[in-house]
Image (cartoon, rainbow, N blue to C red):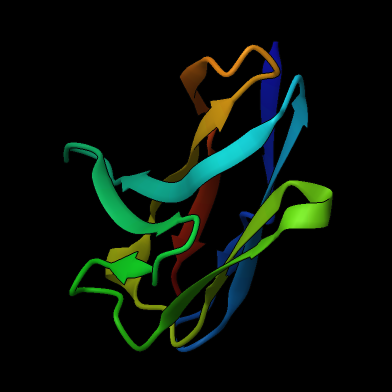
Length: 120
């Protein structure tokens, strides 16, 4: 069993910064990929950024140049650094991971979500 625990969501003013964390724990042989999605009120969930092992990260056009995904493999933790935040970034942010267990089975996991609100 694997668990993803997110943290770092908060209320921030436009132009401010936040860093989200997503820690994976449990039966983890390999973190194949980690990603961040978000869902704003009234909208569908959208991919913000994805980091696949051995590849460059990919970003949604709306966050390029402002958001950065990083991973600490030793801690099985992913981070989302969000700079120059805008009101339209307000959403619940979800961590997503593809993890291979010790029996080499790959599964998809989601975090519980963390609220980011950008408002003055």
